[in-house]
Amino acid sequence: MCISERTVRHLTEILTVEQERPVASTIHPPYGIYIPVRKEEREEYMMQLKARITAMFKRLKAFSNATASDIIKQMELGI
Image (cartoon, rainbow, N blue to C red):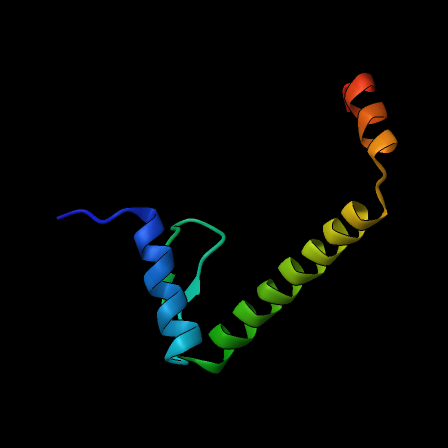
């Protein structure tokens, strides 16, 4: 039986957030999810999460600061 990627993400979210059982994912091949057992694995994954959070905050700031005319202008320029 094969389960969808969406289901895997949902189960990972339940385990990590609701049940507080850390499940990490890899960003380099081989891609997948794993339970970080060693301290180094947990620290590496936390660094990845911090980098993602920082990038998301930057995107959020850009969205917050953008006006409708800015967005239209970007669309016109093909950016």
